[in-house]
Image 1: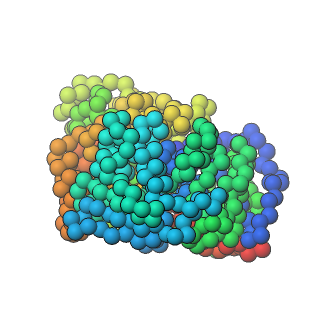
Image 2: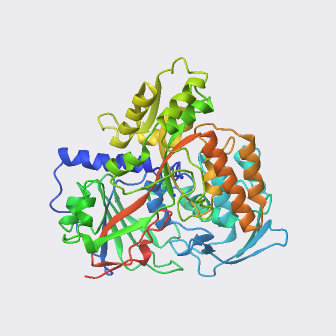
Image 3: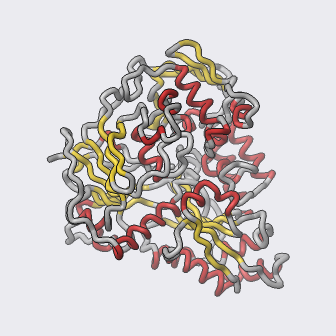
Length: 532
């Protein structure tokens, strides 16, 4: 999911879980939620609400949840996470692998019924890349297109590599053959927007005219969001409307009393959910995620400009103990960067493990061996919200094993999410969920020199060279081997401390059918049916 995700920021999402718990103590759990019936039934969900509904701006899962329902792009992922046609009915790729000719569907329309044309695609891409839009994702997901960089820099306003051939046809030319290019187009940055809608005012996205399976019909700030099926949708039409109850109380209490139909299980409830004799066992679903939770090191600030210090901090934390005791084994240990089950996952990767003796030896040999400066870790949150207990355990290991003096700075989530590059202290707690199932989305996006999501400002010529070679390698096995080498470089240089790969534990009311979450963290709501 990225800023995105950072970005699905899992750290960001976890803050809302803490907030939900905190709200329970100061707000009464609602005894009645607004009941809005739909002809195909209603799916009631708890949520915190989006930060934005502008696809060009959205870069975290709290917004993606809505954007992915309301908008759409040329390409989407199928159930096997392979790119397949969406607004584009089909495409052709030139012999040199650099030009993609897309043919739009005849029945592709915006939610107001207006037919979508190739000019809408070009407008959407150029608007996203326009510096005035303020997209933090455009340079990651669209800059393979020739001319996109010129628009991103403000030099031009049109992307030379996007050519409108006729109303139904356009050609997109990229700078080199890249096997993951189509997957990038499935990310919200490449979704279409309606020019007239956008130009209606700064808050246009409060009344978006998208092309997705759902349209936004009601938004009561801080209370309610209602999505209804889009009658003009060209794909699998939704039957159930979706009502999001925003911060309506304790989610588990609402689920138990039938006020909402789906709830994500926290550690507090996992034992009850897994109890085979309890009421929830048959309602529990576990979905794998292509996601990584980690602590990032700001390599541009002391003491983490020294690789030996970064390696020592990685070796000083007993992740297995934290996962078993604090996380209740709901996650799996991450030795590296690429999540289990994702293409390129390396079973032979050599991670740092837990070795406090070696950690102290490395620290003693570093240029800070005579004494570490005070260290601050930046996390998303508000004042008064307790720091997550896993982070407290990590800090305790650093203090006990390395004698480190570590404090936590809470940064308001919106600022954390969109300004981490400027705001990061010596360390930061973050999560990343894949936007598309390719190791490039982790290794290049997070660690390549100068990328917008490289919040720790890490730079390695060896890594950059491996990633550059992998990007244009057309042989699948050779490309994966290059990414595995790149991952080993990252682990060795330790710009981050990988913690774990996540899973989603979800309770689903038996009357709700076909609810699922893909490994990218996205629920496919238009497939859901409701039995009344």
